[in-house]
Image (cartoon, rainbow, N blue to C red; front, side):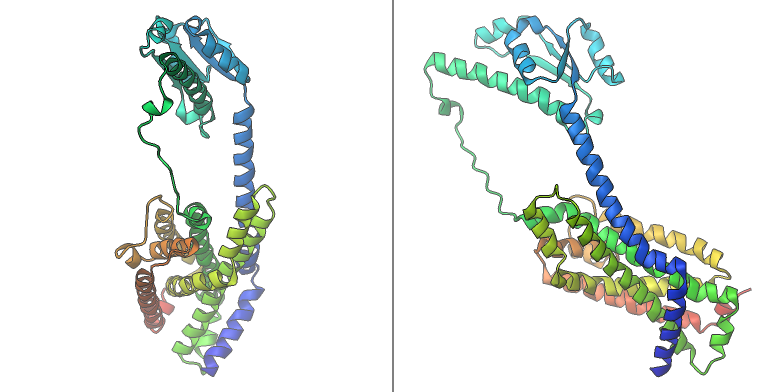
Length: 398
């Protein structure tokens, strides 16, 4: 045990002297996470504000049939009426982006409405260019308001009760807490970032302590020491795992700082996020991060030992990076939940279990299944790494 600690301390000091390792462990998470949140928040807010304040160009075909509707649109403001547009050109112009939308009112509309019949309006817009749904809401909400006015006039003229047309009074009661709602959005991206940064934090020390030492010719010096190969591999493995976990913790801290930097976020949401990133929650998530960090460390060290050079090790580890991103990204999919099957899928189970923890609705049976699968995976990967390191043809591969 003493030899393992000695090797651990020696390798840790060497890793902390490496600028690339320090950059990936500390600097990158501290810059990237606040940067991502700041960029996403500012861009979305700017785009939403721009969409709300934009003067839209809308073609009104048959507007003379409904002067009241035109007046309602005019009162709303920020709209430019295009009245001399051919009917068959509206859809084409909207597709091209020359028009923001179109409202086609069929002939005889007023006559149908006056006879208590149903008039027809066609609303044309391009959903793909209306990312925030502002244009659709502005058009549809005004038309629905006009429709309600017509219905109210009919009810009043006939002397009927409004409730006659509303047989059911639907009362919506959402029992989900603010934390649960927030976990559906924030809870998806957080596990993805934690898993990604844990891997990135372990990658550079892992490459340097294996392929890097082989390239520098210092691996033979360590192997000729009194320490056994088991001691050596466990010492190196401990440093890589420490780096991965430390990067995840720095990511937590960076996220907490980043959230506090945005005064636009409501206080109640800030309180929820702060509770989600409290010591108890961090400790719970860390119990998931540790075994996945063990798996990452063992896998990276095994591949690094196999490689002849640092460059070759980078090219070998890159596909592993992609294999990690895919299941983590699947965890972002709406409706994806932790169950008996997903609890056994590595990385995906960490993503989904973290989301469950953040929402506060933890299924301890499924969570114990996640822990069991992660411990088995971590144990197997470490066993394989030790066996791999004991092979002469692996370390001294030509």
